[in-house]
Amino acid sequence: MKAFQMVAWQKPGELREVPVPAPGPGQVLVKIGGAGACHSDLHLLEMPPGARPFKLPFTLGHENAGWVEKLGPGASGFAPGDPVIVYGPWGCGLCMNCRQGMENYCQRPEGPNPGGLGGLDGGMAPYLLVPATRFLIPLGSLDPRDAAPLSDAALTSYHAIKRSLHLLGPGSTTVVIGVGGLGQMAVQILRTVAAATTIVAVDTDPDKLDLAKRMGADEALVSGESAFKRVNDITQGHGAELVLDLVGVNPTLAMAAQMSRKLGHLTIVGIGGGALPVNFSSPRNECSVSSPFWGSIPELVEVVALAQTGKIKMIVEHYPLERTAEVYHLLHEGKIPGRAVITPNG
Image: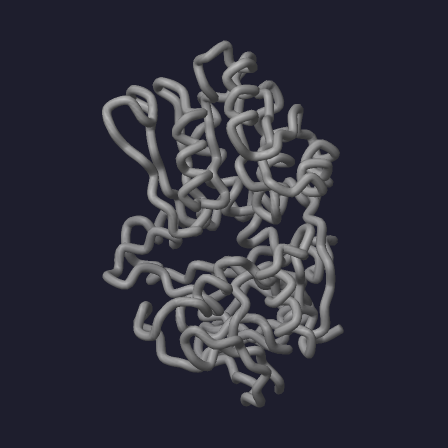
């Protein structure tokens, strides 16, 4: 089969011929319906040689959904043809965090080993080998080609928001910096699970801001000093209870610190490589700063339930496997409005 693989550091991925994997004991072979293209892939491709201890090449694609194709010996709980979404951060399954479903925080020295992102083959190929059935969540009536980004774009946003829900009551304000794929999900999730909070979307792209408004943002502001002043006005000078930075570059982190509130939460989700300016007065007193990673298996179940009831929906563009290199170029240029999903099986 053809697979889109990372073949070298700081070089574009390539479409290569690889064998179709056979599931061993406890494993599952999934026929891929959709594999999302994520900015994390770009960051990985652009890293210097040796930045991660991965053996190359491996197949990209860590946002995956499809249909069970074949169960390995001893694997149970699913049948061929079942539509499933694949939980991405594959942990050891044995440490305390994994036993609670938080395989994103696996305690083995190297942490979780995501397929398509951590050196193991991912889903940008017709078939994906999944290590265990615990990583599969039933999709029900959802189309895997549209649902794939729920496994990262939605799950990551949901996890980042859920830890702050106790702050987001009536009169509260939440700022979402960066309303691309993750930010669009964050706005919808906030509108669903924290309906009382005032949602302020901030971005440099007017089209994305218009989309954020349609998805439920109360305000949509062009990034910069005027955005800070408006948030300051909205919050009567106190700052926002929750600031989500889904970009993570120096200017957005500096703005996030400005917009934060005493005893609030500043949550860094974006992996843009910036540094948060921290001193006695910035962020404001006792503002909690967190950098969450992905989400837990139980949280993915909850995300799928939100999608099944129509409360959240990803804007998806489908592309054949042969156009994957083009997709990453468009993603790099900021020309993907929502999420590009590779559909290896049509």
